[in-house]
Amino acid sequence: MATTIAITGKGGTGKTIVSALIIKHLKEHAAGPILALDADPDANLGTVLGIPIKKTIGDLREETLEKINDLPAGLSRTRYIEAGLHQIIAETPKVDLIAMGRSEGPGCYCYVNSILRKFAEDLETSYEWVVMDNEAGLEHLSRRTAARVDHMIVVVNKSPLSVDCAKRIDKLISELKNEIGRKYVLLDGVGEEKIAPLRARLNPLPLEYLGNIPYDQTLEDCVFMGKSLFELDGGPAVSKMNEIMKKIRET
Figure 1 (cartoon, rainbow, N blue to C red):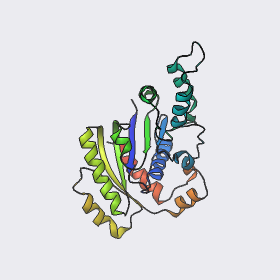
Figure 2 (cartoon, rainbow, N blue to C red):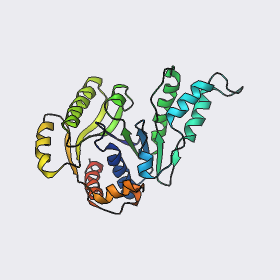
Figure 3 (cartoon, rainbow, N blue to C red):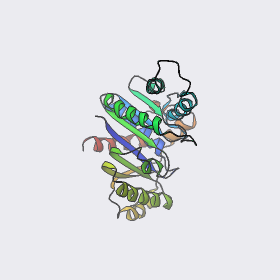
Figure 4 (cartoon, rainbow, N blue to C red):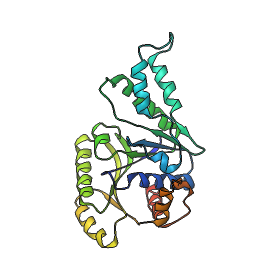
């Protein structure tokens, strides 16, 4: 079974960059294949990693509902969906990517979602690591799309609102009784003078402190130029993430 890392937090805290840095570390330092799951409807993880996405699970869901009653004779709905699912995996030599895409519309998705859930569970056996870049807020948790997670990282930046979001996430996890192995908080781009006050606000939460990803001009330039973070050669953010992931991999 794959080791699953889920990244969550308020929108704008840097979840996608954190997810990409984690995947970069695993690609360079861990054995075995990695599955990247972009659960944010904006689907930016593929762009940051430089992995093109042709179709999302949301696209497949809508396409299935549109065609499900007009399938060729002998082709079951389950086989049709499974065939489509294999086509939406963007494959690279060590990292594969699946984008969730848009949320559900007004139609009935119960049957499709049950197959998607089974497909995701089966897929995990083919990978050593699964890294989930989750949508902003709490939707993925309340709908249990992140029900089994070995390591959950809540990303917080200098905004007090991101701290409030971390508190709500922790409360919701305890209410839903999601299967979470270890829970962490990670600061992103916080100035040295604000780290201690933020940590004081977060101390009441049962979240292990991972550290602070420092501001990195080379990383910002890489994203601005539309380059893959896989091309990033060192820098303070990469060094810090390597330190953090070494700690996580040793637990």
